Image 1 (cartoon, one colour):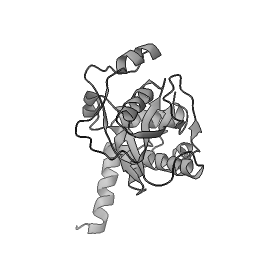
Image 2 (cartoon, rainbow, N blue to C red; image 1 turned 90 degrees about the vertical axis):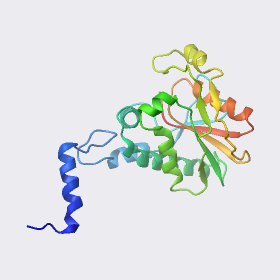
Image 3 (cartoon, rainbow, N blue to C red; image 1 turned 180 degrees about the horizontal axis):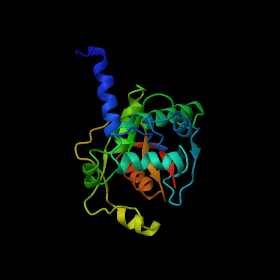
Image 4 (spheres, rainbow, N blue to C red; image 1 turned 180 degrees about the vertical axis):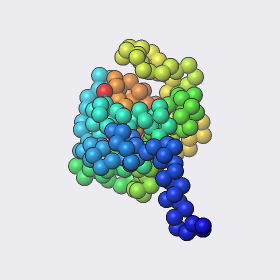
Length: 225
């Protein structure tokens, strides 16, 4: 018996769902990659936060590091959920639109710089989840330009479990501008990261950007611990 061509993909998708069940990356609800409830949670108005280490520019978060915010970050970073780049990018893009509307971010062209990540960690994850998310945001907003100009030097440790002082020693002088990063400096720059803990990464990244002639205007994170 022949199978109509229009039913081939739905049948393959149903088979994949049996082998690898689809579940929401924010709450684990079966049958969907990203549910409406989690979309609403990450779509709340961005909130101002004041990290222990002041980066010298305003800092905003999509929410606290718990619930769907935490689970989505962990799923994208540790569990290989590359499909979450789109919903996370949409949430970041919506926050940028709101911050512009409120006058918190400048109108017009904006360079979006993903926070630096360890090269080894990025390779293990098949790429940087933050960069994927900001690229997804830029795909919906022509005024955004993703400029991944930051990297970390060798010897930087995973920051999980480190105190504020240890985080500072871990990153001090080890956030670098990529070689050949011939990116125009005239645009204002928004630094984007997944989680803000002490603010050490943001502060060091902003310092490097300013030293290189960029004009950072703020930091936006998916979640703040």
